[in-house]
Amino acid sequence: MMPDPFLRWLGALEERHFAALNFQEVRRAVQALSALYVERRNRIAQGSALDGAGKRAAFATYFAPLHFLLVREIVRALGAARDVPSDILDLGCGNGIAGASWALEMNPHSRIIGIDRNSWAIREAKWTYGAFDLRAAVRSEDLATFKIGRNTGVIAAFTINELSDEVRTRMLRELLSVARQGSPVLVIEPIARSVASWWSDWAREWIAAGGREDEWRFSVQLPETLALMDKAAGLDHRELTGRSMWIPRRSG
Image 1 (tube, rainbow, N blue to C red):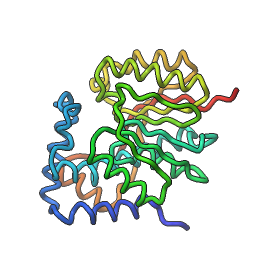
Image 2 (cartoon, rainbow, N blue to C red):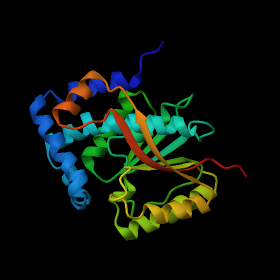
Image 3 (tube, rainbow, N blue to C red):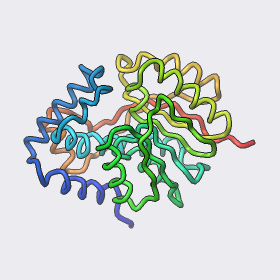
Image 4 (cartoon, rainbow, N blue to C red):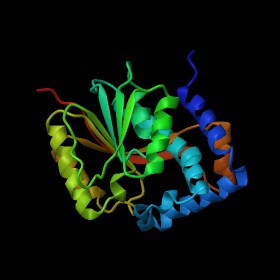
């Protein structure tokens, strides 16, 4: 049985980020970042989620692995790895886990195009794709003006909620346009309704366009180091939750 590439990546990730910070420093940053996500989300768009070494390490070694596992479970539940183009576009890719999680479910693996504005995220995404031995290109782009090309799978995981209302509306038009042209499109966000007030309006248009909306709860056994940080930070992710909108690839 082949080893899970996720576990190999997680080990290399922890070795990389814990070289400069100890467990307690990262644990405090996990708690701070968790509070930021839940209570002060308006500051995320200003870059405060990644404004220090501690928060970056917390994001990379704790939240990103949880997001990877959630995306993988959603992709498997939707059967989203079937009939996907050879390229995946990851919008607001962060450290690259969403595109990587989807690509790794495909045989052969798709090439990833990661898009982000944050210079640290771009460097981290390049490292992530390399750690998974995935073919990838990462570019600095602004989603306010970025134009999505045809014949690519598109994923936006934990990205749309961080956009301004104006850019979010534009992105909805972009995503539905490429979906009508045949591209599979997957949007993932937290399950809490209070986090994304725009979700219901998007879902109506999504379903009208032939897509589906789902809420997910997956029971998982976290790797030991991830479970230890989860407990130390006073959090509980034995169940991973999220919401998705999905439009599969269309022919013709």
